[in-house]
Length: 122
Image (cartoon, rainbow, N blue to C red; front, side, top):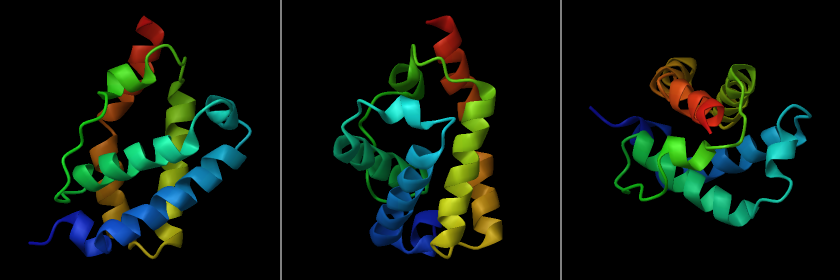
């Protein structure tokens, strides 16, 4: 069976989704403050690598762990959910079917504890 990475269209599709995703989160008043002083080109490159690896692509993700990447940011559960909402919207706008979006959202659910708790523990 093909990986989600292959089913959505590989690297080109991941790049399109990441671009659309960041367009959405940077425009969101709840989230944009997290990106004010961020090197977006570097962040997008990391995100493309992470998403590709998470979806079963051939790339190996060598970035920080979820705990490390989000430590001290104070991310709330509501903000995490909003990010997932924007990711789902970006996937949908790039032509990914609802079943696959559901699979991706399910794969992200366990990360919530890492992202939100890492901020609380810091």
